[in-house]
Length: 440
Image (cartoon, rainbow, N blue to C red; front, side, top):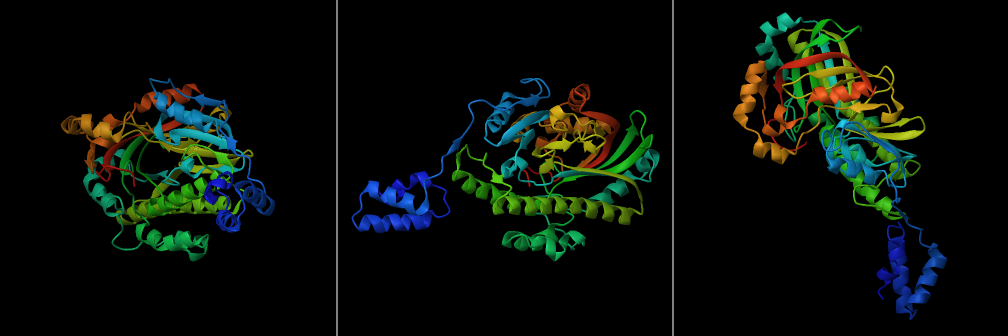
């Protein structure tokens, strides 16, 4: 038997190269397989006992009906995640659908461990709403020039970069010195700051109305944006997904993309810091876009509401992953968008422990991008938007309203389950997207 075959039980050990070299020396000196294994064990220690998937999943809560609101494939993904040795509790929101590893709309709590693939590749993707000092009647009269202004302050498309560099404190050098990778990404961050990417990212002019009694205006207008950490977060996610696979292989046998990092390890601490950096960069992207829009239009902000998804939080002694899910702690405000032709909602969390204080992050995809492109009729979408009096730049069938679930059903499920309280709803009057397939 070859030395590397004898060393299979130590697969993933960071000393594997030294072990292989030593095993080769022993074989060359005439040692048999049994003697080689005994010597390696004596010098490097016994191979770790491999942890495997649990036979039964830890508890998780489903919001919505399987087969009607959420397809069974998404439930299968969450159930598999809940069999990992790190799993404590989980949930899936009514906008849930198949992703990779944890489904989109999945919420996943662990003890002292973070799973990069379950955070997602667009780390810190978020919603950002600026309520404007402009009445609905005024925005109706000035929609076209305001839409032109909105289009001029950001760039859509995969790899998109601004013509002139934006400025923001997030680019300060010190915060990028986590690793050589993050230092190398600082230049890309400067080039992409204030850009919006592709896929389901958008910028909208909206008109809204208050629901019930709260401090929001009875009627209002706003700029609503959805995007994330761009190439920075993507690069960090891809790197640490690989690192997690390497680290997990040393002590556990789990399916690909379900690996994790212990937070008391150097790699785990690095990822956590890089994740938070990505979140800060995503927030800065929105701040730049909104500030430029206000400066260009001369309008003022009367209120700002924003929230992350695709992130992990330390809450109540657990690490809570929200992959396409909105934080909904008691009194926490956020935005749950519909599609480019339906209502979006400002909500307030009710802190429901069964959902791990979480809510949906949108309407959720009804079917895949490929199916949408192959089945949705473009003219029917254009006719729908015309009837709604919504203008769109960057229309694609895989992001059309017909590609998404019914936001009213998604909201109803969450309201009845006491996850959130709706405060206001908004309809878009002008929408900008990338108009291309894929996720940035």
